[in-house]
Image (cartoon, rainbow, N blue to C red; front, side, top):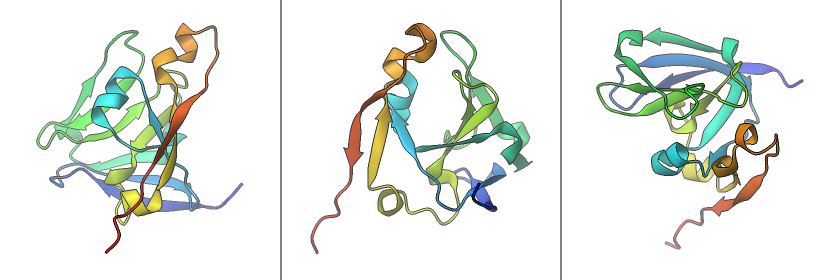
Length: 141
């Protein structure tokens, strides 16, 4: 397994800070489920013990829906989705890559798989898949 590096993360207003530990070669994913489609975030998965809130825990609010299994945590001040506990794997979190200090979202993730969360494995006889891909091309200067 690749060595883990600690990364600093924060919401937009800086009220919520957290650290994560993940491999240097992190991979992101988007999802086409109802909430992910609306928030449009690139998410990076990690074990739940690899995330520590270091500031602003009192600002975090949890949103749950449907099965009430997944827990989506966002900053109550700026509204940024910081991370969520996954429905399919509740022992994991998915972190909003845009919250990671130093990440250049479009440059670092120009080609992303889109998980077929609209047909969630827990609602689809355990079947999961990829719905498609999202690609970013910078405009010519």
